Amino acid sequence: MRKPVFVTGDEAAAMIRDGSTIATIGMTLVSASETILKAVEKRFLETGSPNHLTLVHSCGQSDRDRGIQHFAHEKMLYRIIGGHWGLQPKMMELIADNKILAYCIPQGQFAQLYRSMAGGEPGKITKVGLGTFIDPRIDGGKMNEITRSAPDITDVVTIGGEEYMRYKPIPLDYCIIRGTYVDEAGNLTTDEEAMNLEVFSAVMACKKFGGTVIAQAKYKVKSGTLHCKRVTVPGIFIDAVVMCPNPEEDHRQTHSFAFDPAYCGDIKVPADNSDALPLTVRKVIGRRALMELRENDILNVGTGIPNDVVGPIIAEEQIDDDVTITVESGIYGGIPMGGIDFGIAKNNFALLRHDDQFDYYNGAGVDVTYMGAGEVDSDGNVNATKLGPNPTGAGGFIDITTNAKHVVFCSSFTGKGLECSFKGDRLHIDREGSLIKFVNKIQQISYNGNIARGKHQKMHYITERAVFELRPEGLVLTETAPGIDLQTQILDLMEFKPIISPDLKEMNPAIFRENGPFGLRDFIHTNQS
Image (cartoon, rainbow, N blue to C red; front, side, top):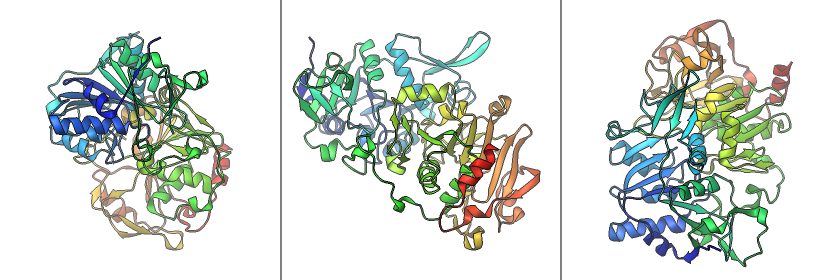
């Protein structure tokens, strides 16, 4: 039987050749193979090798410091093909400064592209990406100027008279993965990982191209002691294993803690009242956004405002049994963490593989998705993927918004310096933001309003002072906050004049209430009727 060799991090780094294409599997700092990644960086800084690498990754894989930030060196990296870089400032700087070639592929398409590659298919065929900056007729997912003249990694094909995107296969030389237990034969489990991710699909894609699989593990056990159903990757597909010598530092479950059994499903912990959020602009936006829910809805939360506030509000309002939260990482239920720890949740009742989760999002489509956003124009086009000079990338944004039944964008009305207070159940703008978000032309099309209207998709754009709905006639202002002047605090701060609903209403003052629940359950049951 084939078995991997057990090596040190430095020995694993020495295996990687110049000019190679490397896939790393992880999300935020979850499943980051820090022992291996640090060793690869150390070897480059000391010897200049490996260099001219192509890095391939479906998710953002950093906590602003670690993860694939270890590859963020000019000359070490030649090209990056990834899903998201929002937590990777050094990588975004390399991209913005045109120091590396940079392509973006939507996260779900990327996770499933590994499956297509593994099966020898001609790529991933899908509607996801059409009409957005991923479409080769627009930007082709190319994130900076030097990539404009580089070869396309996508194209548009016609099948049965309909257009589809094709994400082309990416030959892999190496795949770096992480697990919890490994036995003497190399069989690897992911028991303590907070996500299941697309580990096996990526391994098979790498093997399809004759590549080398390197795994990092936390515990080594005797052959035959792992239950067969626990094995995520059989040892016959792993070439080398690195045992992490310092799990507290280099094999953390996520950024904020080394290990908590509530986040991998080993235990359920009591709800804590301290999880209730103080009243802020973000919470106000989240409260109004959640008023769009109906009983038994299955919802998705994206990064930014949604992931930071939706779970805690649902817990505070005690509607956990009325709706189901999902996250693109494969989570069902529970209370998601936000910020640097996006993608994990405590007390979730199911945790699917990352690539399997997108079968739901790309197929049936979630009932409601809550997404952050940066810019919107009069046609309802939304930019959430390139904010100023920062090329953050798509993450799961394009996958999920393409097929969701109802898309709810959550954003402050202005940015950079906005300060608000909420006395008397009214909104008070204490300091206006200097950044205009309602613009004539957005930097990048992340969500195509014309396509959404063409297929009658429901869409809202919700801020702390105004609610907009995308209707057949365009973007319509439907609600304003109590205490806000329509002309000076809304219309004068937009580059275009929206359609104003003849039934313009005032936002419910309950969402500006400072203490305790605001009555979300009643709104959900009213929507149901």
